[in-house]
Amino acid sequence: MKLGCLYIFIVMKTGFVLVTLGLASLALMGLFTDSSNQFEHQFTSYMTQFDKSYETENEYNFRREIFNKNLEIINAHNAKGFSSKLGVNEFTDWTDEEYKSMLGLRRQPLRSSQTLKTIKAKGEPELVSIDHRNEGLVTDVKNQGACGSCWAFSTVASIEGAYAKEHGELKSFSEAHLAECDKFSGGCMGGWMINGLLFFTQRGPITDEEYPYSLPLGTCREAELESNYESLPYAFRVEDDEDSLYEALTHNVVSVSIRAENDKFRHYQSGILDEEDDCGTEIDHGVTLVGYEADGDYWIVKNSWGGSWGNEGYVHIKRRGGKGICGINQDSAQAVFHQEDY
Image (cartoon, rainbow, N blue to C red; front, side, top):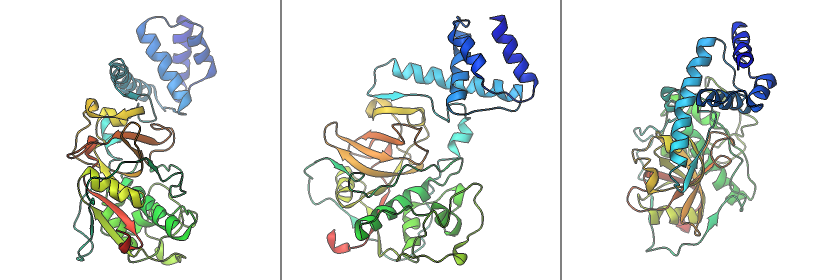
């Protein structure tokens, strides 16, 4: 015990706290036996897993306390046997304010006065499984970083799906292009997916290889680059109900809005978010609906927080009526090439 504590103290005094194999080995040898030291071991293992380091002893202690609090929330939830399971991720040592900064859905005045077509259900649908990942319409999970640009990632995912379906080739388009150049949105301060889609009805997208995403966001570089892709013909809204959302999904991926400012979404790891999770309906985050699983009756949703979050970057949300679990039935939109298909 003393050796373990002394080791931590020596590392702290260097002014830069790092996880080392030596400390992890001491923990694994059983030198930490009480609950406090078990938390210590879990925290150091967490730091190793997510490559965390802290510059001062105060910062280390501050982040450890946040981690311990969140770990108690995670363990308490998992002990109740819910259909969803929570786990640690790169946000487990973040403050609530830092986490909230990534939730950038902001409804704003429409950038166009045109009347937008609304996708509506054609009666009660016959529900069968859909997974647009298997159809080559979904790029790999991306990571928006510590920035409220979720709206841009959701928008671009819809554009990627529409172009892949139209041209038979999946391209990874630039979120930075949209986040830096759409004057109707606020970049890391938030935006709205329908305005993002309308942005692309006025110009073609640019690949993220040509216009890479990096933080902090900068000034628009659109004038320096030339898009090799046509502008989007249409941007459609989706009626706010679960049948209309399914109808839209039968055509392609959908930009959707959810409530993410809650512990259940923040720490989600696997399983299905349903009524037991009570994640709220006041939408604040943009994600992408890519599929529906009939065996389990749940939506398959792509997030933009990297592959280490959730179920390899995805979350499963139970299909329900009203505003939907986590508010998913509200405020959805889709990129469209052929309106006669609807």
